[in-house]
Length: 282
Ligand code: PAF
Image (tube, rainbow, N blue to C red; front, side):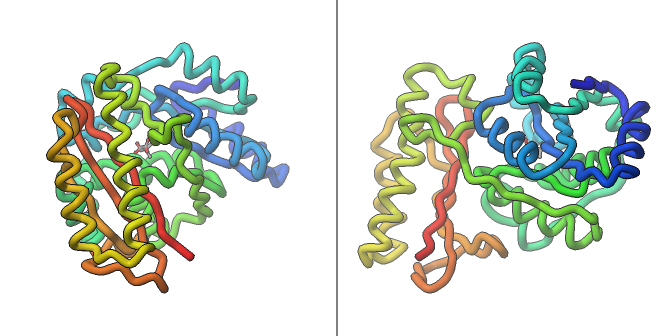
């Protein structure tokens, strides 16, 4: 595995790969790698000739500096996991490498970013747009892999690729879950045992709402019931529980069984903010 901390030697590897018609697959990450990331890597390994993984905790996508400071970094064990997965190249740039100057460019994703994550984390998607564009321009992959757990990020990146004509195919990989259903996330590492147990309210409420909608209950009633469940739980603080169209991220007021729809949730367990979603399709 080649470990690059700057983009200097990458051009040579890229050029050789392109000359020999190799397909470059790219998995951008912020490290603290878990099985969910490894699934993205395996998807790249199985469909591309060369797999590049980046590890960069991107300061510009954190609207809260305490959250940035507390973000887990586990570089040595991440590198070991990547070696075991036979990743070809890992790129771990410094903040100065990615942001030699504070960027003036601002991304606005219009209606896509005014709700859910966009509303609760102002500036977050600007930071994601910036760093993903930079990484796409540096790595120049033909294929890039993202997880479905960050559903709104997926919609934003699809838009970014379309609007900026990045010649990159996006592959969206289903959410990996722990045995009890909690969606895998680097943030789970920071949950206390008590909050880890309480965190199951996210997946349980998604499953409950899905079941009720399919059984014919109205969305408003279902949503209210979930809000009450969160209120009863002393440990989980709900931020949002919404029915959305996964393409436009338009919030839906009623469930229409004939269209693809998702339910998205965000909640705090103590200091830790978790998100999850499920889709309902027939
Ligand atoms: O999903 C993530 O881990 C990050 O948002 C990403 C795409 C690596 C950009 O920093």
